[in-house]
Image (cartoon, rainbow, N blue to C red; front, side, top):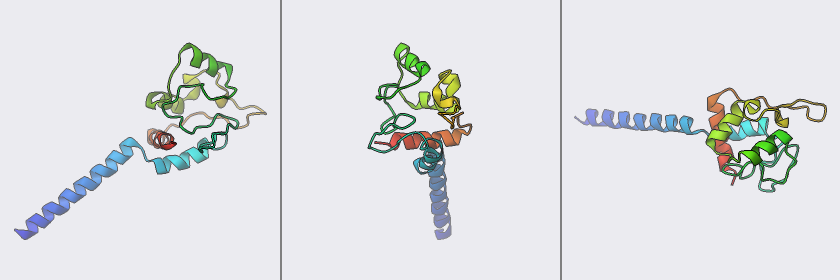
Length: 141
């Protein structure tokens, strides 16, 4: 009888651990997202509370922020969309942007590669990586 209770307890613990791991993967891992942000965003964007613009606008407190409100010289395409159809940087819009910025905002400067802008962002194909990056961006507060 005692062995049955111990085995039941072990199984319950395993189920809870696996559920926790699954939940974390579903919700995103901000630690992994930080590495992704440093590699994909940090070249052009400041992600600290200093809120300094670089080649791109700062990303501190980007989650939930209306698009285009940062004092930054956005591309005409980005500016026009933000004025004509205002939107927030919420999960849905970050997802659209991170999958394919050009599909979301055609002719955005961020996806162009030029002499003055040698690095372009074409999107992140992995859904898991997008969730992790979004979890990190949500944590920038």
